[in-house]
Image 1 (cartoon, rainbow over the protein chains, first blue to last red):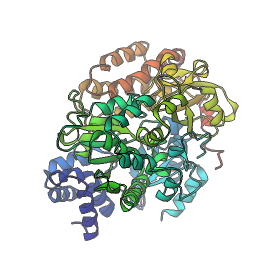
Image 2: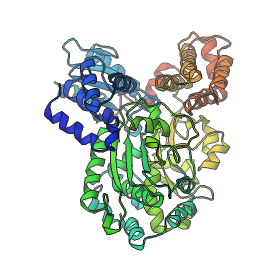
Image 3: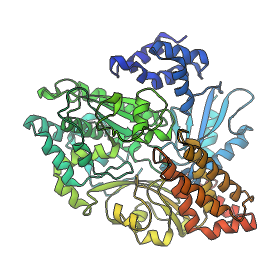
Image 4: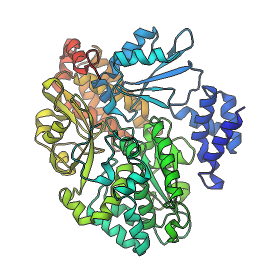
Length: 157
Length: 444
């Protein structure tokens, strides 16, 4: 289900916790599985649960509780824009509208070519860098004004 | 990100991010890093003495609650045999707050050293740093810093030959504001949904895996090495009585230079505003949320008279909270601002307690319809009634955090809400609001 490389990374996470507390690694393990597969299918969640010796439903509860997990397939790039108040005051909402126009999709939609899924996000803890957006959860882009957004979109092939 | 007047070099040097190597171990050691830990271990300083020093500093929790750190440490049953844990709360998701991210990015070793000192003082042998999922680069950097500390013998078994063991690990969050609540954070480390626990029992007696645990904020731990170096009394003197030391303030919104600024507690708000480059476009301050989105909004004129400390902000009817200062000028529609905040709490309520799960939905729905020209004459009273039915009726503070912005926005800007309901439009014209954000003409 997962590559040896991903399993190695998961093992490293498991080692951080007491031996009888393997379940503690579930958040990291799900993130690693998602990184490899783009989203978390029921099969992937069940695989992670079994790997950690926990009930699949408990792993599913975690996957559905935290909002950075993708429970449905997303585009090659998931672009999450923060529109919370501090970002909004410095153009976060405008940045979202600009992206919608450029991509021709709304929030929670994917471009027809499957390239980009647009998401509205909650506070990313980087309000001083507003407007802020995340590419595939792990890459943060700061000060995203029209020119910077255009550059980013050109780069995301 | 400019940091002016860095008063605590252990915490803030390197925060400007100009030097990519400043965060590394050798640079941290050069500015006095790990000298406090080394001294404590080589002198075998009694645990009580460490805790007393922190008590003397009147360091108060920098995550938002402002609870005295030394007192919290003294609650730990040190003599209790078996596992004990020290946990750092870096799940920084309170809108407006972005100081812990910068501390971890530019000065991760100050937090590692602070946690090691805390673990020594409380007899803990293991710790976790729970890092907000959205700041993934911080997670990877913190792990690199941990590797550096382990390689230098500053973490792990028998640290510097002292017989003291402390192992520290990073735990990733993955998008849940509620995990900033300490017991939800513990549930999350245990690999579950992050839903807060009933208190009591408090974490000091029943924490991570049911073991005694102390949870402090990133900035709190980061302040500890400096306190141990200059002494608790000197740290206290840097601030005000009952408001010891310096603090990082995250300034966002309608200012020219948003960023983190370190100031002694008790510094006038107007000075902080100046440090942040003043109001964008020279416009007038309409309102300010002084301590993160959960703290009540303060009208501009009142705010200009405040000093930045727990007591002054509390007198103005708000809270210093996490030190997240959200500045709003006259281009802000207060109804729209509240609508966005209410959506946030609705989205982030964990769903465990009915008053919060249902109430945050009601708050958002009502503010949303006022903003969109569908408001009803009795909506403002209805908002008040929903908030009083949430507050004090939930396990954790999220319900209160959702209610306080609603109550304060309606209280201080009631006319603007009434105008929306009566005229079915904003008091502030949409093009003025758009100009306020500066998005379309901004250059970086």
